[in-house]
Image (cartoon, rainbow, N blue to C red; front, side):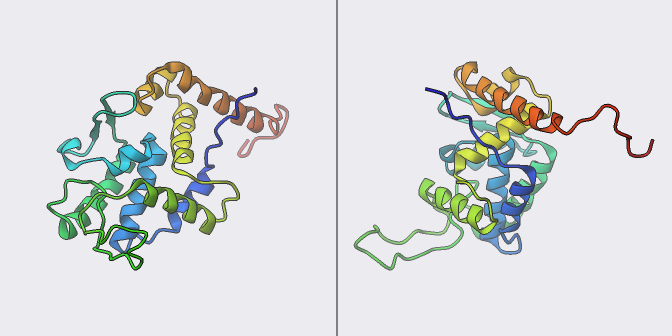
Length: 211
């Protein structure tokens, strides 16, 4: 059976999804930051909701994933992501300073249907993976992305983007936490397919801009 290759978000699709968050309110800033983190360094949904403040370096330029699917790993944080993260952490310090989670519940909510839920979700508590999956799907629809936008799509986006940027398979394997490099190599085929699409319109004899 032919394996279906992962379909990453295009840069304009990612920008549209992020634009659907409102960075002027804490929830929107938190969500923009965690989505950007997923799309930049490819954290899994469980790793995002389970990321603790103790896992961040003092300068916020590195984070540690403990007991991840591929084992413990350290991940460098690119400057653009670090600046976004620090903007969120500054707000987080005013609303959930004692929470251990990097991306905690922002405000206390009370379930309206006690028959289907266990009770209130307290500010500062851990986000659920179900919330993050719903968030990805909802924002994808709001942004007009025509295919499914689950958390794994953001991970695919990170992997393909890193390869497109020139990172080696071994480096991407380390960042994503793949136990087997064969898993990472799937994204190489995706990157090569994207290159083939771009090459179709290339003409060596066409005039260059500014020539």
